Image (cartoon, rainbow, N blue to C red; front, top):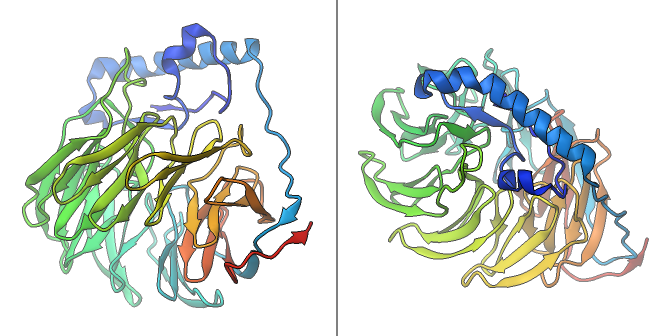
Length: 420
């Protein structure tokens, strides 16, 4: 059973709904049915109706703050469109994979397209003939995706290499590294497969709450450690055996019901050397040393999008549209910008010239890393939907779920003022 988001981002809620603050801002799905008690499964439809009715009643009695028009009096940094391409529609989980001069996109219908990142030219396409549930992972040679039929497919530019069955759905892109393929499933199981044959090597599972977010989780390699998000904990595993090396809480579940207790770690994370910084859904932002497993710092943060960063700054957006920046090393706040408040914002992207963020109308904003003031506003001119921002050499990609991919260049870090 799926609980649909029904609360506006900025809604001021009555006290009787305050306990639900920060829990119903994304789609939430029950774990694989075999992992949920039968009584809970039978109660889910009624729970969803009660939740929907109560929250809509709250909406009808509370005022909804409106986002203000964003005006840029002077353009302080140019952003130039470079090229555009169109591929079949891809879902919210299917972020394009960029490595060097290559952009590879997996679409909902199973069509994989590789583009030249310099001009958008199509290099090759491959039809996997299966509806996909995740974006793709790659080591630069082999690619892996998961399907809605609970399968994993591994392929290269010439065709399918192997496929295997999974015990549950996966929406997190597989990790292809070290001649292995690692998969994070919706029931909080990590599966390790041989990269050449697909043979099962090991599995590792953590018990968790009966609900999990319908959002990409945390799965990455840090030197010789596999780093995984299990509920609100960042766990380091031995990639050869699956044995745990460390387990560090980012946020502790709190609340009186399963929705309030959701603190799953969400993607994307930011890594700098051995330091991994991650968000716990609507609870905390924190950084961990992924070799020693110790928590370096954490801060309360009411957001549902992942993080971006560089060697100095870590940035994110709050659920109400605030844009936040912290010192990466200490966690001290650098700025808090409300210029985009009450908008639904994407995960931001740090570029040398500033911070890029997009909203649900298809607009993009370039902000200063010093204080958050606007440097530019860019209209993607696609249908009104929030796109995904992906870094690439010399600029970034804006990818909408409808299949429109646009490349933008950031030509120079020198400030040039231009009246708009």
